[in-house]
Image (cartoon, rainbow, N blue to C red; front, side):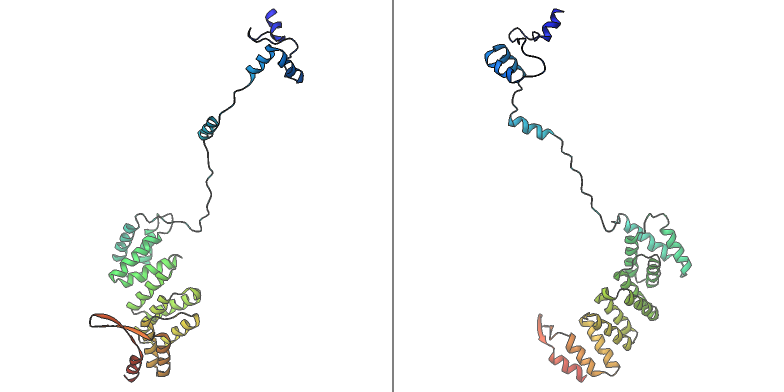
Length: 284
């Protein structure tokens, strides 16, 4: 009982620092601060409850020890990245499968559908590599079949696929199918047709001796502002000459061929003017 009353009255501290009964346990008031200056026991109690100041080095160390978790920034991708791992082997398998099939559309399309049956997404990279392999081997009929199958699935509608398909039509003597494909490309991708594709179509018409079609493609090039390369300019000029329009032939050569050309003279590359070439070309 005596110990409890002594604790409540403030005598439960050490012998060296005791608080008089005037101080309560609830807090310190202005009167307490005044008493602390005159009462050494109260001053000792205040010093015991005062926390030591934290040094700057300890504060910095505590900040460094804190784990900083940064939230990753979410990025929206416009298209998915297709995995190209193993696409070369898939392309070789496709070439092997197609090469062993008969020249029937249903058989080829059925085998190609089986080739993609277990794929989560269309193997576009492998199919494009297979087209390049077939193109290098000169298997133009298989190129046509695979390219048509890709386009029927809504895949591979690029200028590279169109260029390969037009070349295959040219090699396989299918000018009519090439013309129908070209009309589709011209109406669908009017402003995005490359110079290479125009040159491919003019070359196809030149191989099949169709000068009027060459002039039509050249008219589309001029309308769209596509400048032909030098080989294409020569084919266009030859087409105008074959239809008996020599004046337009000269205009095309003067407009699109540069005034200078490079020739090899005594082992060196020399630049000369084309004026003499114009005169010799017009007399021949």
